Length: 445
Image 1 (cartoon, rainbow, N blue to C red):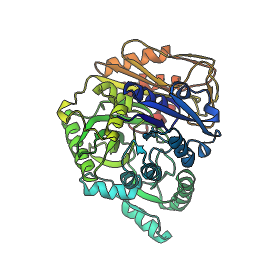
Image 2: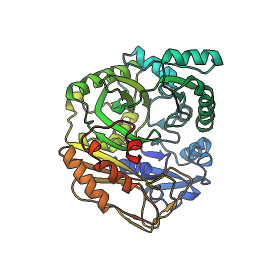
Image 3: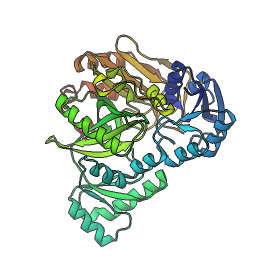
Image 4: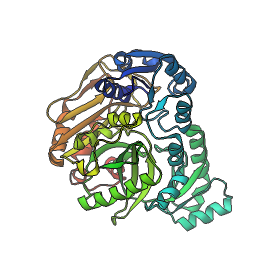
């Protein structure tokens, strides 16, 4: 097994990776910005080295600094977590060139699946259904309007090189197209350094469902079931659960077989998530793939009993998967709420000092967080401060436990999204499993 791993991330995911390494008896090296000097991932890693100022571009996205630390600390591998450099094919390639194992897929696969237009084409060839759409990188104004009409309104413009809602605009009328395109291109260039945009038919009230996969370097691929990720704000997930209330055992098997076949077709390795949009008529379409561990991976861990981060590390080391598809058993139901440092009313960020922090416990409750009393929530980074996960024998028990845990979660000194999460999970439509991506808009109205 690896002797030493550098964790190229911060916050709860950095701490999560450190915990997995401790169980595998692997030493860890944390990198941190000046703003994160007192963070828990710095405290609990075996070594910690500052890589720059608070700005992410000068620290957590600074590839030369991270590689320098990796070489100085003599690490065997780098785990990128999620966000930051996790889906950078260039970073993965630099790691490979420097003889450092990147804990994730090969650079070529990251590049393929990170280019939304190429990914759509390849997944269609591999047997996954896709929504009508096309690349519009070099099209003229007249051709753009023609393409939009062919795809059919409403349409959505998406950044070809990114995700997370950035570089994304919905267009309902042709006359809105050019202004929306200019805005989407500007956002995409700013966020991803790539202004490429593609058009796709916009599904107005879909469900957002994704499938978790694991793959080794020996051609073995399995899936770990689906996650329901429909509850979103501005394309950012707020609540996730597994299994989905609308996916039957037969559909899970069908979807799983198709995804496993597609992953084998591109020689995928390590952990990954294939995302789908489900229409109201039951049809589904490939949306995109995240070539990394997901924020919401704990809900899958709770229903399968597997440690996805440890399996990532084992796969990167070259071990074969220790189980086949028939060994994967799904037990009960799990729900995750992303607790953010923001106003529950208008979602404005709420930086500041946490004056009191007391996470809930009890049967079926898990909290992934790097927060603590006197922890400073800064405006430099993502507003996620904790992931609250509840597991029960069925969805009803998981919801009851989540309700109890939200009531007992104490975070003072800043505003959090906890009141919003209480409203969501107690809403009759959510309790009954009858919701779509417009749910939050309806809740606010």
